[in-house]
Image (cartoon, rainbow, N blue to C red; front, side, top):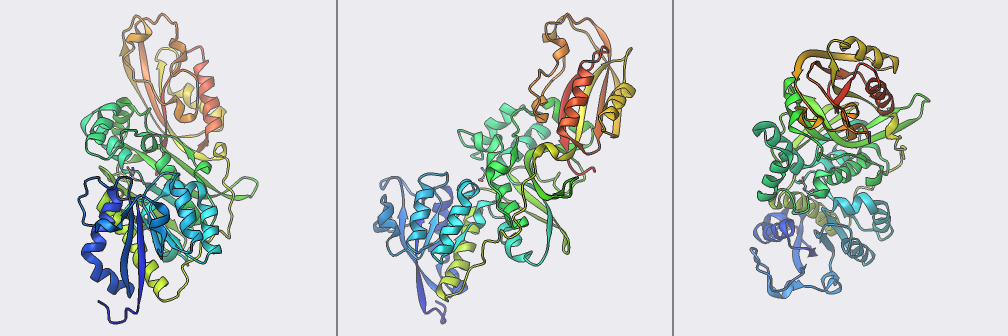
Length: 472
Ligand code: HSE
């Protein structure tokens, strides 16, 4: 034991699942190192579990196990909350803070919903609330944003922060599997939950995006502020089109400073699938890995990469918070304060300007690239890249049209993907496939341009629309 260790901290762990069990195991196995690093003795005083008799693959004295939160909190100096979800975690964390315990949590959903109340409670009780494990598992992005970059100004955060969806998109891209097949594989490998909603609908990434934006911009950003779209609508056809354009599809979390046309400074926070050029640093992030790029005024570009999920990697982040908290607690030091002095407003997503890839089918005899480009120009949208190729389509009815249509909802467009074909008798036709990438445009301008093209007498069909990052 460290010779300078004069004090001890009592640690209660709430939840002994995938991450909690690894935290407990590592505390037992590495206690000597952890004590030396923090300069205090570590006493594991309670482990809150749901079932006292469940099988466990970690060593913990039976007398520490409890199902009673009140018992778990008795004499705890630091409470490690790894239950996840909102309740009962919210209640337990509040009780711990009010009782004067510091809290270390990996609960992004809780902080992205109730962070302001919990940080205020921690400040009022002069205790700390740490959450390195809540964003990107083992990747030390919370501490980097809050402490390493405390002297800089962060302008943009761009990340892949959900391993499950990255795995699914990667499998769709590398094996040609459908979304459903890839999701099943992710579930079989334990990446995706039986109910994959939080991952595939982008909610997990949105919570992480809110936490990163709060830190980066010294503002309070909650999950409901994040404009969020998931990956359920991504089709093999879109993956193929991405490959043809030398791009990949990724679920991205984006948080950036923006000044509006009226001079107001604010932030955009969004999670959505997007194309990335194959040479982009995030494009090669494969499988269930996470990566985050930061654009900072003084430091320039920084990139963080690593395992964003899993019991052992996430336990590493929890232990880093425990070491820091234990050291400060043991030596009467103050934690870094939650900083929200900038209070930048979250700008309406309708005013965000991004690039889009738009894939259209046009009647080759009547229309083509020039009509499409002209219509976009009418709506103030310029085109940075475009291609056109002839396709021959033989079909007797809409059902036989050999086109994968999807993602109209990626521009929040509730209209059918191919309105022209509804109830239509479609004959064999020479068609041209037009694929273009726009310069940054608002969603509403894009929607209006697409509506105008759809109602054109030349029979333009919108196959898919997807955002593009890294090309503007
Ligand atoms: N389910 C998350 C992911 C890990 O797949 O990245 C926990 O946030």
